[in-house]
Length: 173
Image 1 (cartoon, rainbow, N blue to C red):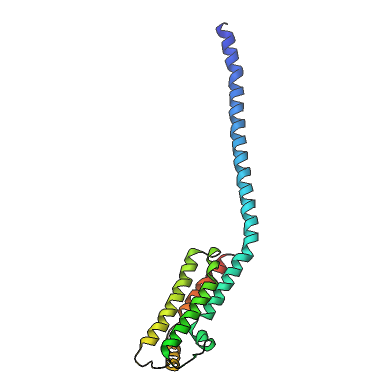
Image 2: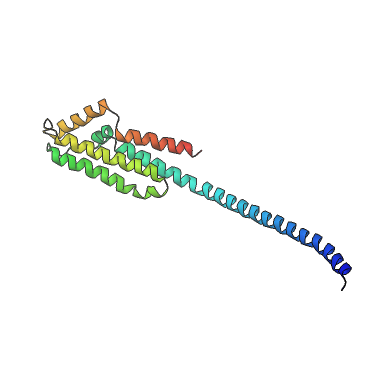
């Protein structure tokens, strides 16, 4: 083989290699775009299917927060005796039961939102315990008055958490 035939072979090979590299690049980009499109469509379909479940979870947590709001809780849960300690236990166990009933909803809501909800629950329980420890609180009815007067002065923890839930739901759109 002489140098002229090697040179002509080289000139025929260069366009073939360049064409092959360009085809490889376009094929690689095409498969990458197709993969991205499939992932997008799958994610979109999953969102369509999971959106009602997520909204239902937020609805249930909003209902939970409304039910543990001290003003509504005290109206709904009447004292069974005049003993403030019994009433404190009854209120706290009612809140805990409500919470346990909705415990599975944490799967469908964000960690931040769940944290705000549990903080509201714990703050409400703390509010009840503090009202029970006051010296002026000597009966269940007096404890109800103390808690209600406390709620007149400041916002309930469940109201703050409910605002957060509403904001998070509005961000979903």
